[in-house]
Image 1 (cartoon, rainbow, N blue to C red):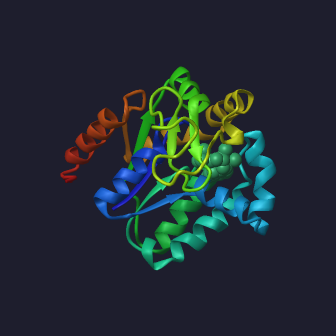
Image 2: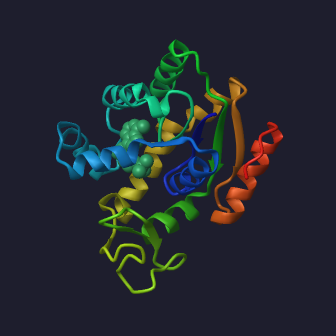
Length: 220
Ligand code: AMP
């Protein structure tokens, strides 16, 4: 099973990708997570990516395509995966097609989480992340038991630098300019399935489950 999750920042791609990867027992590939890890470890990739990420801009295609090419070589991803945050440009989508054609493993579905800008902004501006284990919280929708402390590992909760208001607006703009053409791209290939990203986590998962059922696939 090879799936792409498409939608603006704040659509819930990361949350849904985690659940889907657990339920379907497939690898969750998040370019955002990989880049944040590289920034934390101060690798060459992280150092190159940081300026773009801080500004809410996309990291150049060549860097990201090379990262995905490397990741797909990993045996864990050789057959099945949920891609979250990639592709984000038409060039990335074309590169993905090529990489998957060579491996004779075409995509099965592109799940488009159609989300209103208001919902995206509210989710992103209120998001807090554990600096230690990366679990997400929200200042109103998903509060920790103790303010500022992760329920799971007691790490400190922080705001991602790119979740500051000015950067959020730029990220949404970048999404509209560079990523929305992919809706058409995958529609033309008959791969696109759409549902509302404005739904809460459980309702959205149920909606995604129905899309899988339409394809004859049951999620336990
Ligand atoms: P995300 O966590 O998916 O919102 O990604 C955080 C940031 O990482 C983005 O704002 C970009 O700067 C960068 N990034 C993640 N995925 C990509 C991608 N496919 N292409 C370019 N930049 C990316």
